[in-house]
Amino acid sequence: MLVLCIDVGGSKLKGALVNSQQEMKSDRLRCETPRPAQPEPVLDALGDLLKPLEGYDAIAIGFPGVVIDGVVKTAVNLHPDWIDFPLAARVEKQFGIPARAANDADIQGYGAIEGKGVELVITLGTGMGSALFVDGVLVPNLEMGHHPLMKNKTYEQLLGNAARKRDGGKSWNRRLFYALERLQALLSCRKIYLGGGNTKKIQGKLPDNVDIVSNLAGIYGGVELWRDLQTTAAIASDAVEPAVMPESGASSPPPSTDMTESADADDTETAASA
Image (cartoon, rainbow, N blue to C red; front, top):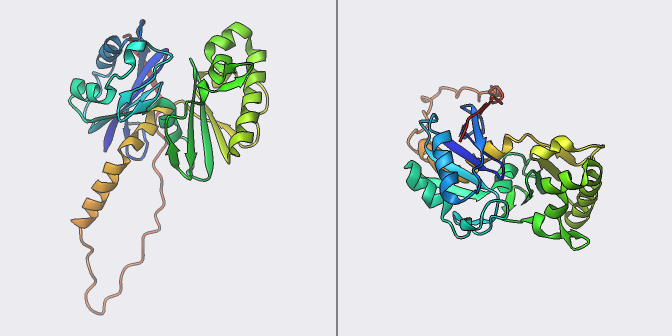
């Protein structure tokens, strides 16, 4: 299955083709997010940006806000017009391909986690996104960024890009390490993953259970929105290909031990204007 994975961000729109093994099969295309970031200008920009990509079976969209059943419920870093916007249905109509949508940090989490124990994903960009997984199962739309951290201010108010620019890198890093300490005390995470453009601004040694992950996870994690159909297709394929039984008296061949993995996906980025 080939999925067109779209990442709607507060500053950039991105998209690429990804297969069911989370391997990128095209360049990652990107452009600036239109301002004001209302639904129609953003969708028009995505249509222009992603025109070169063809041959996909489904679409997955990561959006910076709460998304329930494909409908946007919050959009703090974009525009109020997104509230109650049927994102998945609208993209499906525009592209003529089945589409599903979810919170962007949730999708980045799908591309980063190991599926063991309590795992937390934090994205540091325009705002602060979050995703929580327990044994690989998502707790959707956590939105930790809008919870209070200290002095009646939220995580996002203290760790978003505006706060970093306003208060400087030293204060921003101090708050980040404090936030990681508080989140670890709250959730007892086996692993915490940090993603987003501002991970490049982190200074100092992170705790042993905290890793920085590639921003590409926010793209290729989108294939997990379609994992149910991929599993169904695999089961159907097995059902129509019965095993060949050995003739009477013949021994069965030994199981294959070929564990060769495919090469890493291309990390190329291609800039495009909206």
